[in-house]
Length: 304
Image 1: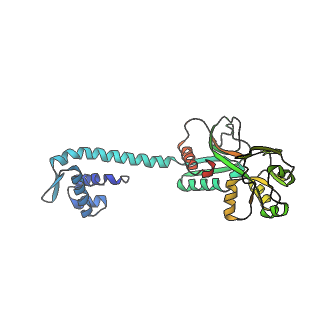
Image 2: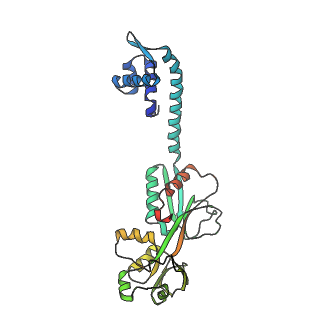
Image 3: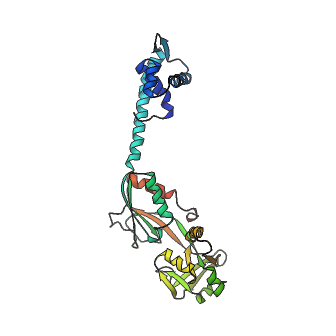
């Protein structure tokens, strides 16, 4: 019999006495001491407000109330057992294969830790993570869940926005000492620019809480790459100024402090939506568990 809830201990104690007729045999059946069994019976009788058993020779015999209550006791124990089995089956069903496709920018850091925690919580899960530069598509029926960065057109999948990554301008302190700190976005055209492929080029829109929107045409990038980690590496090596997600900068600063200094910190770059994509309809239990797991771990500043 699966382990019952604590609230059912008194019921299982009474059931053992009714089955075996004495404290010794009942206690042995439950794997507890006779004194513990006796306390559970006394507690149950106190809760019900009347005695359920009386002693006759070496046996414990049910009272009239005990005989009546035993019928309901068996029903409640049966219900408790079925509920425990259902809960066990629920956990067991969160198992099997899950293939996740993620934008390459999420292969390290936050998302990797989220997935590691998930497979540790559910040992029956076998998870495959692939990187993909192509937007999510329902045509790829091997993938159960996509994590994407940036806007996407109609994918034929359910889209769930997790949040928005905020961006600011950053450079290495040595670059700013050598080339000076820009005082206004208009001065960025005279600085070396480090850009991500297909992002904010050649035109960039910055926003200020008081001055509003400012549009500028960026200079040709000194170095263009399609990976935010490599992009950040070159900014950290003093190659120039570039836009970086604030979350990435803060995370990296924990391991490598002093690599980035904000430029024009009051000016904010375009935010980047982060979204999940998965098939329409009721998700399988294993996918539902993964979705809930991810939602609970979204970085706080993405949802501000």
